Structures are given as C-alpha cells and as structure tokens.
Length: 173
Image (cartoon, rainbow, N blue to C red; front, side, top):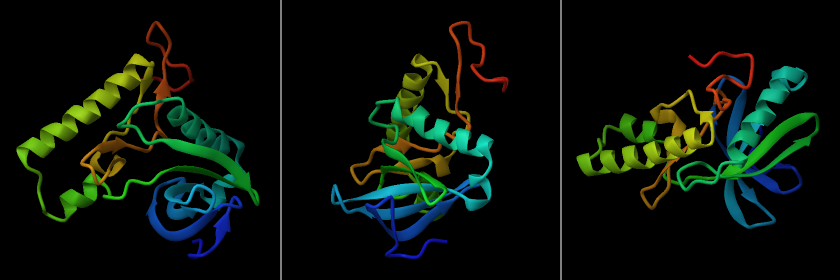
C-alpha cells in the first residue's frame, strides 16, 4: 500500500486508495502539474517482473487511450517508475454504480434508463471500433457528478478482426 503524500511519476501525489483488483490497485491522486484530481492504476508488485502481466497492463491502458467517447474513462498517461508500472486516468468523483447500489439508495427508472443508454452507446462505440469489453458489471461503471456513467476496467477487453476473429490467441466466446 502506498501511503498518502507519496509522489509517483514525479507528479502524482497519492491521496487515498480507492480500489483493488486481481492485478492492480487504484489510488486517488493529485496531479501536481495539471492541478487536478486523477485516478492512478498501479500494477501490483508481484506482477511487475512478469513480462506477460506487464504487457497485459500496458495493453489495457492503450486500449482505453485509443477510444474517445464521453462514457469511456480517459487515460492521461502510462509510465514506469521504480520497476513499477502505472497509468493515470480521469477521476470520477461520484463513485461507482456498484457503491450507489450497495448504499441501498436505488435508482429511479429515469436514472436507470439514462445509464443504460449511456453505457449502451459506449459499448456500441467500442464494437464499431472492433473491441469488446467483456467485463460489464456495476463495479466497472463510475459516475461523474453530472450524472454521467463512465465505463472503466478494460483488463479483459479484446480487439477483433474484420471477420470477427480475435486478434489474440484468446477466443472470444
């Protein structure tokens, strides 16, 4: 765990840990150059020496970075420091859809339909760009304060070819 106040990549000051998955940990950080709050995803140390995990982590950030859609998280940069791999992305201040559901607040029919339309539009954009997300769930949807849903976590995403075949050895089922 990285302690608050630690600066990584010579610009991102860690504020707090906000999430963790199988391969990475995500921190809320302050960007000392652009003067804004960001999210920094960090490959866990136990995977940093494994070329395959580093390749997958880098490919995840590249997959998101090439997509430009209002309901897909924006990657700001990918970097390596101290034998650890990172990427910085926009921070969605309203938390995850999963957290909202867990709070028991519920969603109105109107809110639900708005989120479904936004996420459907993001998925359609991905499909138009020959990419599948493959991990759609409430914890992979962040919310902006303006009521916008943002798709995150492209760790399982796959590119596919013109004929629908996978660009990697992993079969798209």
